[in-house]
Image 1 (cartoon, rainbow, N blue to C red):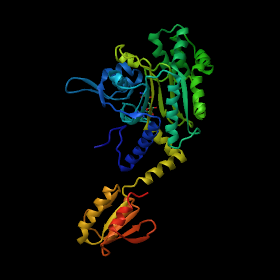
Image 2: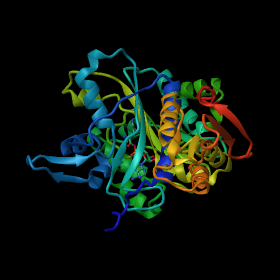
Image 3: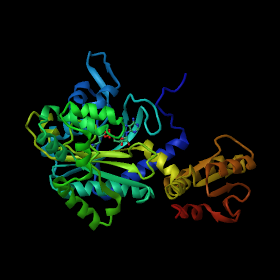
Image 4: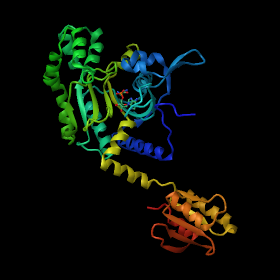
Length: 415
Ligand code: HAM
């Protein structure tokens, strides 16, 4: 039986690496006052057909369940979040600052940076329309990546504004009903050939030159992004952002600010993406709840690739992994008759909060010391000839001393 393409097994080493990413995500989101939530893995397929739109609908893992419901495994969080908040909006003070970091599923072609199951951190601010919220969210995205040890030479946030494109399109006679189609042409400008883009733009009565001129000379719309840029500069984060109108994002619900995060080397797919979706809650609640909102999603796959490539980030992760050993103390049982005493010691140490391991079946002392090394423990406590005293041994230096049981217990928790 083989692993399905695009899915991953998480052996303990990979799980530890995943936990590292999760711990930094949670830590920095917490520093910004975000609280964690979650939703279901399965939703009605209609939620994504109507709200996500674009490419994503073709990438759904969907099936008909035993109750004849057409369902899909979540490819993203935003429609679920909008549904949840619209349903209980009155129960929470605004603005809501929520995050989650579960698994998502997309039937994409497996490639560097893209899998079929991946983790995605979602951070969203709901109920705040001001540019201050935009800047706060962008600062969070930047600080999360800085939290991994990545710097301005490693990544950049590219900011854009869908409203600016909507105005551009409207001024050229493109109706609202065709705006998303037009944006999808802009979205693919960098990947499609010139001839292809030229042809697709001609359907909207435009030329590639006009579109390029707008991208290279953002006028009125840039002023809207200016206050966000000023805010980020005041925080000392100005060097992490650039205005780039080629970013429009593939999802249907975005309204104003949109952005993506890329590695500076240009080797990887996008690290994160997001923006404002000021009308999604209204649409979701049939007009009952009007609430501005914005957020971003950051996947673990590209992020892990970048950490591997950047020395500082790599070292920081390895230091974290090294500090998170399976055990701190290994209890070595040198005299089988003392098993009960040893078990009582193990129990007391664990109750005090130490990570403790020992041999479950009788084994030679040498073997037990080997197991102690493998467990990553810093200390071994030998229960043997010295009883009722114990031999306390620091494994790295091989220094040892004799201690009473209470003295050993008093060493825990260890600094
Ligand atoms: P998205 O651009 O579709 O946005 O995804 C955001 C990030 O998730 C990507 O930049 C990438 O890091 C990661 N990602 C997406 N697909 C895959 C994949 N197949 N394999 C690995 N990583 C992937 C959204 O999903 C929006 N819902 C984000 C958002 C939240 N907007 C507002 N709030």
